Image 1 (cartoon, rainbow, N blue to C red):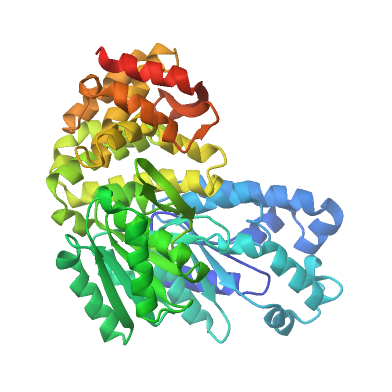
Image 2: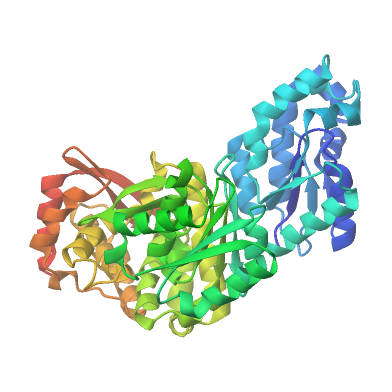
Length: 528
């Protein structure tokens, strides 16, 4: 519980009472943000609203919350915020990143029942029920963007506090995607520990895995579902990127239909990025959309594929050309699963970790340089830190740009040439991570040539990739053939490709490149 716990929710949802009880149970300080604002103005909330206006109140509210978030302490506090505090999305995303946020759920009927005609609540003045209904609809998406949503109907303060404390102790990360927001748990043993809760309230499950992973991990999950009296079916895909196609999707859809899954059923994807990508796409397609849970078992899937809701399959040599944005309902990154990942897949996945560090975490880059031996040896504590850091970067970006309208494209650093090299190799000769490692070298060298990337950064990154035992000899690849496949890149718009350049650690930019120029630059990489 190193981050503060923020208790959010509508008026009369019980935030202050629940927050105080959590603080008592945890032995932590309690902060009521409204009380701090009243002390700041020397007046009650109603007078602040009437004399200063809501804008002044919200500005003070924002300043007070940021002060709490940015004040380091050995004992992170519990903070109850006003019902409109996190409506501004910029502040909400900062809170989700720097704290654990739980939203207390309440209905308009419950609001009326609890407050009556309470004139001390200026935003409910007049017709209380109508105002409550309007504000709940207006703020619904804001309350949904949290690490957990907790029902208060029929629950005691103690019950809600215990549930909120359990979330705080888990310390999940969160991807803010409106009503489709979800938590990501990272750590040892989190798969078996949380898969049942993540699959509620469904009674029917289709477990999708592959023929390599299933013999190692599927039986334990199946036994948990069966013990909980869940109806469960299982399908094991043929492993490998070459089987990430529409034929495999059809196989899974037919398995879901044969198992009698309905819209309240849930898919669980247990495996690497191929499995989680396909599971998400099957979930998006079956009955026009059902819920799914990701249990990534490879480092690549944990740090990249399982988070963000980009699902899909390859179409011939066009990687991920068919798919959908469909967020999971939960992601469980159990680093114990990484013990069984083959050496080549594990090591090559470190390319995506390096990419993430370049994009948004200089501390992670330095950690990779400093702890390379322990990382290659799969130290579980290091892996937990690395996976959390990668997901935190990706969650920030995905939350700000859920459908790749702009910012999210920075996640494609190294992927334009990398995907082309991977496709040229028939998705078999190179792993995805090996291709991305080569793609990073290519992107940095192209960036050097065009004046965007300092040569020191390019050399430092190449050296780190080599230390992590990743491929760096892009000049040895058949680049003339690979260059022709760049036109399949999903980021192409007409004759232009949005190319990501690294200018420094945590500093990347996106620039349009003419497709013909990019192909020529790629061919020119044959000279080291």
